[in-house]
Amino acid sequence: MGSKERKQRLKDETRINILDAALCIGKKEGWQALSMRKIADVIEYTAPVIYEYFSNKEALLLELTKKGYLMLSRDMQAARDKHAKPAEQLEAMWLTYWHFAFAEKELYQLMFGIEVNCCVFDNSLPEAEAPAIMISDVIRELMGGDGISEDEICRRYYTFWSVVHGLISINLVRQGVSDDINKQVLRDAIGGIIRAIKA
Image (cartoon, rainbow, N blue to C red; front, side, top):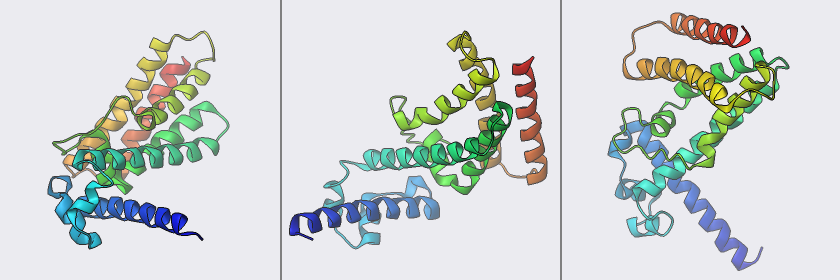
């Protein structure tokens, strides 16, 4: 390996280490505690080195937000691919969305601004649009394919998202209801919306 490739590999590794350190701090102390100085301490570099990779804290959080959406999209795609019927695909994708929100709690909070004062959600992020597009495509298929207006697809998507995201947000902010009850509420809601779409 030449020196140019070695330098690039080192840069790539440093960038990954910065993001990993930021995520670790976010998980342990919360996003409000994140600072370039703390990241520098974790990776044993000086803070100015971090600015060579990210212009500010918001740029770093935006990169982590993208990472979260890529992970969520990958997981939802895998869940969808396990089923042939649109109704089963929708249920599997929303259950995956639910599981992601708790398995990657800090990333989810960052992605959607839950308990995060500096929400970096950006509507122009293609990564942020991917889960919605994936679900909307399956909704369209469930409703019979072409000829369904985009407004109708959008309405059905937001019905799903409002219920699922709302239930997640309630649970992230205030615990207290058992996991079994939450999952039953979630399945009931998803099933009810699917039945309404089919009708």
